[in-house]
Length: 216
Ligand code: SAH
Image (cartoon, rainbow, N blue to C red; front, side):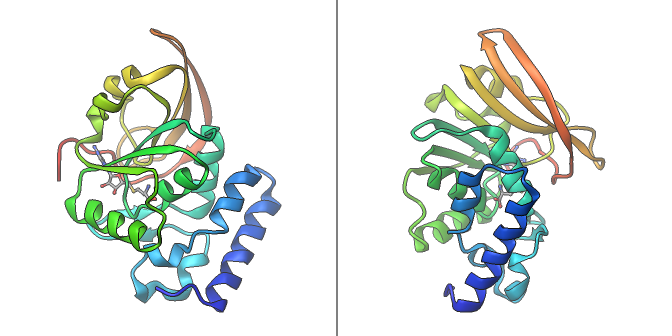
């Protein structure tokens, strides 16, 4: 989909609004200013793409709200060239953010239609550089590419999967929403201090679609 004058203007206003909140890393917002979010949504959503709202994508999933993407990505503190595992590819928007920040991105999705579409969308936008896509159950992570300096989970988990903790590098950071199903989750930032020692910070409440088990 074309990135026209109107969409660019709406995007600029969205990012200006997020910047004014003063809570998000400028580098993250600079990257988001360059990603055409409307291209990740069904064209019928058209002008709504630049509201600070989540939207439905295929398979009854959602693309996260822009302020949530900014919040999670700021919390992740991703540095250029770091390996980052994302669980929940969804539309592919968040993967594009991580890649434009310079990350080496490994992204996992359990729904085949989303896996395919996200790949295609990012390819068309020429934003797929440095991203590897996996159709898998994210509960197991991607052990053959571990360890990861960063892990970002974009679905609400009832508990932290042990394989993800195992695949996090020492010194690494994982950002994950954790909570009971059908309720708000606590956004956690886990820092791995040693092979079996973790520090946990609670960043606030959030609401993500559920982190499921197995392939869809
Ligand atoms: N990051 C996405 C939004 C993700 S919505 C974006 O930028 O658009 C959460 C996604 O997590 C959904 O697509 C859902 O299918 C996926 N998901 C849920 N449980 C999963 C699991 N166990 N493994 C892989 N993906 C999972």
